[in-house]
Image 1: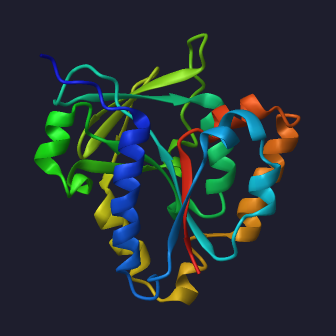
Image 2 (image 1 turned 90 degrees about the horizontal axis):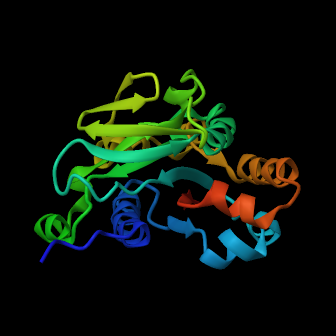
Length: 224
């Protein structure tokens, strides 16, 4: 029997749990916690509740992407980036380039997940959203770009652009081994995150479905 494709939510929950454990081991970050979007918030409830409950602290943001089901268990793994979502993330990343990343897990079967578990971060990679600030708009009607990853490289189409991707663990260790005061210059403040969400609500005229699509797979790790 062919291996079953791994859902985006399964990957997100397992990998974010590992990311949180790693961040909590960093100096001064023992009380860190993960903020993920509920499906109800994504599709129905809109953004007001999220805006009113942004916790104080510093935020490290990840935009989760799941690979396509083919080819199975081999590079290049293929992902999709959306122009509108990317533009929205760039507004958040402009002030803190190191704090907002796409995350590309190299898993599309449970077979490979079982082999690498409990360390899925060994083959999970990050790309700074800020590094995509100059990619041209998509040429297709969907406004999407195909991303092909073959670590440590990624190629973004429509117009091919090669980027470097970095293993999650090495990025976290580089950012979070700094003292807390210096983290303030690298991570997103709760005020900036709230302002970004308010801007998103205004831009979409409060359309809960559109907001949900923009925030699908988005989460932050909050350090108090």
